[in-house]
Length: 179
Image 1 (cartoon, rainbow, N blue to C red):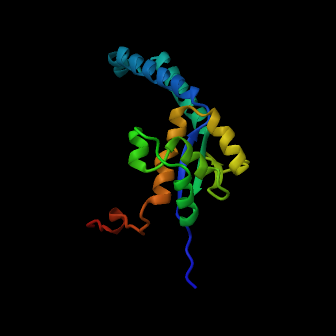
Image 2: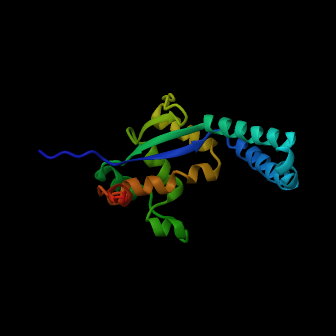
Image 3: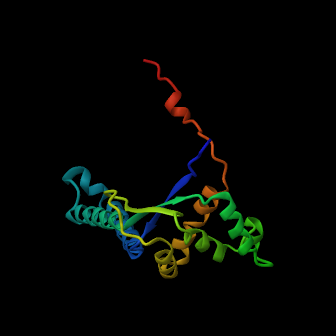
């Protein structure tokens, strides 16, 4: 009997989205300091303020990476996906729903609440597993997310469940370089 593994996709979720705003401001401040001190550092080295600003941006980036979780999502069996699609018909007049054929606002959560849909949740920086109790925890987490955080799951969930799976080939891996 032939068997198959359903495809999987990884989705990154920033759990501390406030760091992004801090990072943007610190990056903007750094760019300004670099511009202001551009002429000086050629002769005397970088100004202490620039060095400190660079360190602050790197620190914020490290904190942000520490708050990044990777959700590995597995496609549902075809029959169950079809049942969910029928249970979540598109809303009339909603162009996104009409395009995808489902009520996106309920369908994505329904898919991710299915047992086995979320295979794992790990920390991006070290691969350590984050305890995650599947369906019940997904709904609580989804309710706490911003719309932008939640929407980061929409395309991957639709693609892994509806997309064509082919082995694909990386052209660069097969190209040779002249010696």
